[in-house]
Image (tube, rainbow, N blue to C red):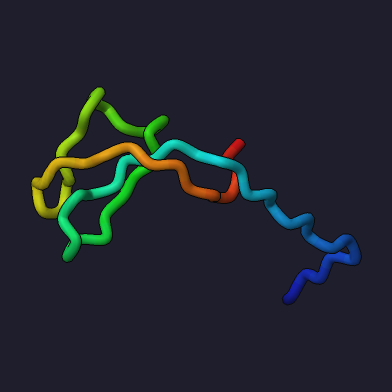
Length: 61
């Protein structure tokens, strides 16, 4: 049984979001700063240092 909604799903707006990004050029790991458990985290994948950046990401509610 399938369910079809007549109401279209509203697109989620992108907002400027602080993220931690891995400094290692070969690693693509990043995380939202709001979900980091440390003030200055190390990369969970390659253990390199991470730097803060601003990215346009979908808003989380």
